[in-house]
Length: 192
Image (cartoon, rainbow, N blue to C red):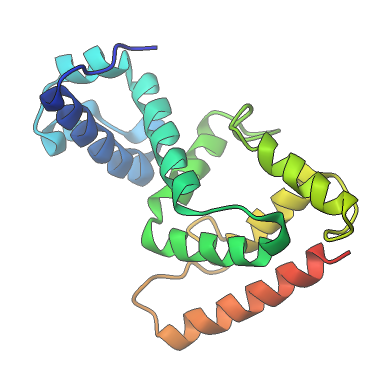
């Protein structure tokens, strides 16, 4: 792992790089992203980018990990309320569409098949689903597949949608209608 900044100034520079890189990678993917644009946006230089993150790929990995951490901290997972989790994911993708774009680039450029992020820390969620299944609160089935279904439903109107990508600028009534449909659909899909 690349060295981490040890000063407040270094941490601020690292944060600027991560934020600028998130925009660049979300917009252009790994292959299309340019370190020159990232350093200009972050008001830094290539030496600092490579010093902190090692390579462009290392920077992409750090951005994905950073944004996944933000998402994990923003939304609590409760297997007794997977519908609430799905609605919260819908809202989070409205606020931060780059999260889904980064995951899409990761799928396209790095992991075209299988689990998108092996070892991503989702195992506690799977164990919680299994416990809820054992208690009769969640339908039977492979916990990871139930989780995948809930995520797919939550991302139905995200930038990854092949049908329609919602934006925050749309009327509030549209978002409320989608949230209600999503909540009801997830509740039905996960009910025992």
